[in-house]
Image 1 (tube, rainbow, N blue to C red):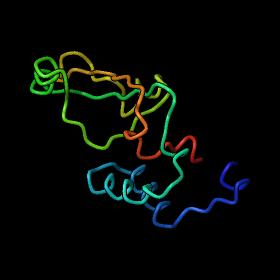
Image 2: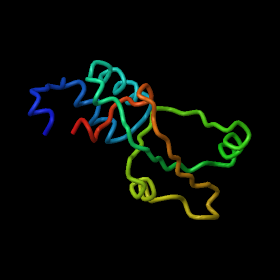
Image 3: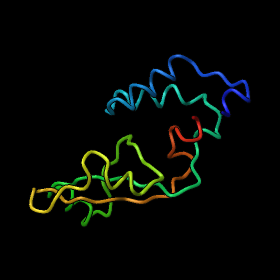
Length: 121
């Protein structure tokens, strides 16, 4: 365990922010996580692998994606495991329910990573 071997300590605030984020993500919790991770070592705030995220888009969001080639992004969770992205929250929505399931892939730049939980743990 890296944290123990390197005598690293993490604040209660950071641990609480991670716990809160993993329970349920929203803007408030994302901003708290961002605030508490700003002083964490850079090695825990980078990811050299491709990351995946599943999202269900309504018709408006599909149009935004097609017309603008982008979506308004908030703080969100990504995974390095494609199978996790495919099955998270019940998987990609079935056809005919008014949602378009999409799985995005990105190789994040260091400034895009708030915390890499795999490296932290």
